[in-house]
Length: 200
Length: 139
Image 1 (spheres, one colour):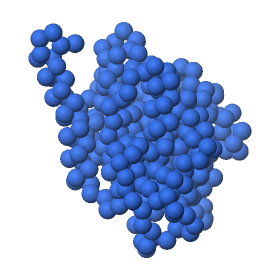
Image 2: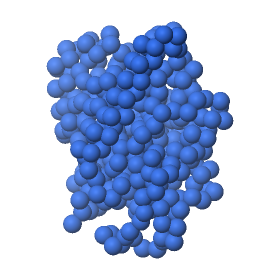
Image 3: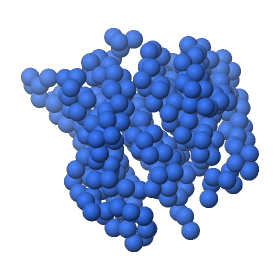
């Protein structure tokens, strides 16, 4: 079926299809994050779920953490192993000319795309709601390692954004607008390129 | 009081049921939407082919859920190799992790879509861990 027309593929942070993967007290939906899936399906995307790096490393009953706590050689090795497991599929999509995008989870220490959580001196017993960390513009560790693996394979960078679930106070309507702007801007860019004489 | 909304139930889904091709879309129930409406999270299996590493990673995740109070159910599609569930490879990986394979529900494309949807809804609505297990983990 490799000769078929190019498809639109959305790589999704694991918990966007499965909120059971979230840290204790972190699930905002029962299972699927419906607004994300609805926005993608309405625009003709197929879904490709990424593995959850934190679940397989720290377990289903882990507490929340910041970037610096997960930034260890062992966790990065684990993320590289997961990246090597999913990369062949992504490579297949890209080499057959599919349009691939990535939707991560902004604010997450692992799956953040535009933002991650940071507090270099944080540690010890979790204490919500007193816990306080910063949101900084940076990839999460899993996304860093996934992108590094794709680059090692000589693949182009994938346009990406994040669903802002882990940014502190969650604003679903704002997150939805943000995601739809990202998706629609891609469609507009494609239309503009198609209208430009000589454009590829 | 916890504001965590997780549903504690997970459907391991054959890739074709997540991304049905156009020719099947007309004859199949919308399995993904039914799973979603019943409050299940989704673990998507890879498409057909050799995906050893990815299946091992998937088995790690299923085992973690099964060990900690989550109800896991696999949903496959008749007509796909191994019903799209990679069962021949996945089951030994699960047993190696001390997990019994989850129950399977197979969707048959030759069954009327409305009937298949109703059957699936009934299975999903009625499936969960025994109450004792739920109380042990879901606090």
